Image (cartoon, rainbow, N blue to C red; front, side, top):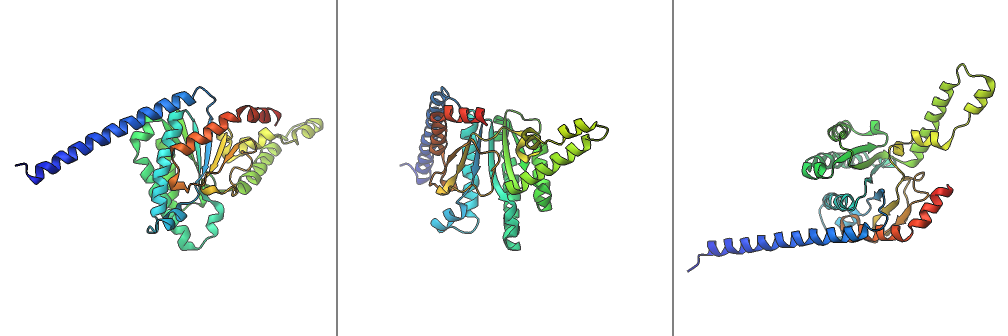
Length: 286
């Protein structure tokens, strides 16, 4: 007779074989799908507003923080899909400057969570190295609590030599802070150049061009997003990349952030490919 222990081992072995087969099949199908889609234009840059973590937890009656943990797993999957598709830049809106106006205990909770997720991401070394991800934190980093700021700086330093793909994490960020700051810094730089100039040259130098502003933007280190995705069906930009998304495709699937998956990335890119010539025309006119 076969003992219960032996039977259990055989069942686990069969289960493991089936899991590996399904995993390999999923990868094969995904690669085939991406190869077909790559015959059309692939966006360079996709930005995400990660909306719906709390609602997801409430929907499934989960404990506090479970929604954000599920959202982190969704982010890891979406990054993988984007990079496999050939998207070079991915930007996520992690924490708004406006969020500092919440109750101190709420801000502390989010800071602790962010610190945990930054360290969790850096433990995914296999993924970071496989896709050559360089991590950049965008925003007024001085506003971050010290442990979060230190973790962010370590992540940027650890990935500084990677250039294949980029992950930009917007923290302590709003466009209403980014734009005036860029104007101020462009004016300061321009005024510094006026010393020793003739009067006619000074008048010309007083003009601040769009390119001067964009160089001073937090997001000036990468191209503008081709697609901006906001989960949970919301269509508000919430003070995120207002300057950079004037010629971007806006996509608002009803799925909450932890529910976002492969089909949403595929659909966003298909919509982009369908409207590609229109957006390229608008960019040339800008």
